[in-house]
Image 1 (cartoon, rainbow, N blue to C red):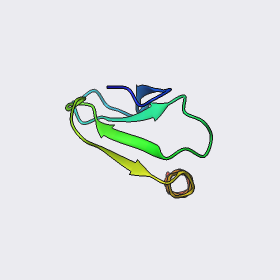
Image 2 (image 1 turned 90 degrees about the vertical axis):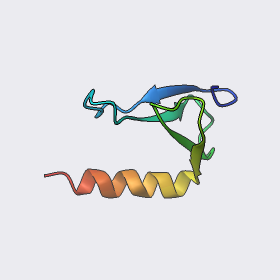
Image 3 (image 1 turned 180 degrees about the horizontal axis):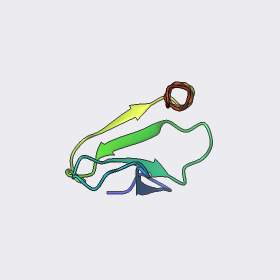
Amino acid sequence: MSPAGGDWRKSTHSGGQGECLEIADGLPTGSPVSVRDSKRPDGPHLLFPAPAWAAFLTALKASRY
């Protein structure tokens, strides 16, 4: 099931090993970010406040080697 007004998008860093995350894409700016396991598309998903998700991505990008 797609989130209201959006679609699920697989991480561009997924290695094709079946361990992939999908995020809800196309939602309004500032909306909570939905994340789910691609192996369980009908299973539960996690919701992150937009500022927390942005901080996570910033920290992740800064930690790249």
